[in-house]
Image 1 (cartoon, rainbow, N blue to C red):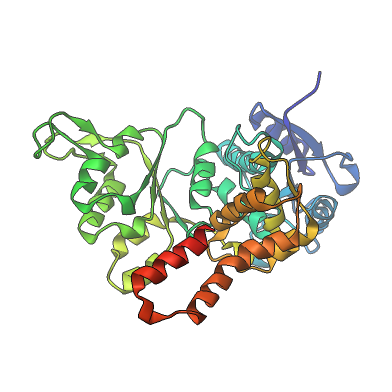
Image 2 (cartoon, one colour):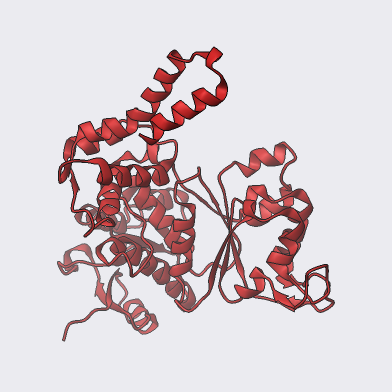
Length: 413
């Protein structure tokens, strides 16, 4: 019978520690113990814990060599260095050799479980691209920055405080928020709302609810989104659009987890994690006195920065293949390599959202089953060319209405 458990390697010279680890492991992990580098069985592992001092030579920790060797064998292996020696040079040497983190001995059962939960989350994120797109949210891309994104998302597993995501528009803030949410238990609610779309005068009612008769039109009690997300996550997109008058109310909720419906007297305690996202620098907005500093500090205890697409162009190929697959079986098309290279020359101010739109256009206009570089040039350069031509040929005496009508006709054509 096949063993589907995740595989953990523990390199430790004390057999009692190995046995203790084995007894502490979650049921979905299988442990392989080794006392030295030469005793490590040749197989693939999902994670490795490596003790630094495997011999009596404290000046030359053998664990550094083990970490370096394991990292060279498998660059994606999550390696955790463990030691009772908290020498700074040793800790920095572990990270340089390939370890992702350093833990101080003795380790508690809870600490082992927490680290393995985060490693398991990363393992699932990496494997998501091999599963059906209908099964889970995916972070598409194999660039170094995307791999770092997956690692950062995985470290947020099990964290209960507010999380702040900062990125340009279209870079993938909601995808990241859903990934953060989905790596917890699957029966937790996830509610997403765009703050910029909520009028200021009804924000409090939407988030915290209201009681019957609280204001004109409140003909029944209404549960707010913070209460509806109890036990799960409330995603506040474009939180930078929240008016100053409402920021204090959000801050109060973040501090005590209590809500009071508009017009109500009873205080309701809810267990809802806030995931906020912004396409602007909230630090800059604080300096401009457009965002409360205390709210920023409360939101940004756990912060995720998503790089724009122009900084991770190695992801473009994976993203294009993913988006074009979404069009099947209606359109059976694929990308030529020169088309991908042409897409990489563009700066992508609209990020992944813009790339998705371009892929949809290419699938529509390409006359061949294979999308060529020429097709890409038409889509990417067509709009700017029309704008330039329109500016050069403007005859103002013909009137704005006439010129707009003709320009719109050209765009539609």
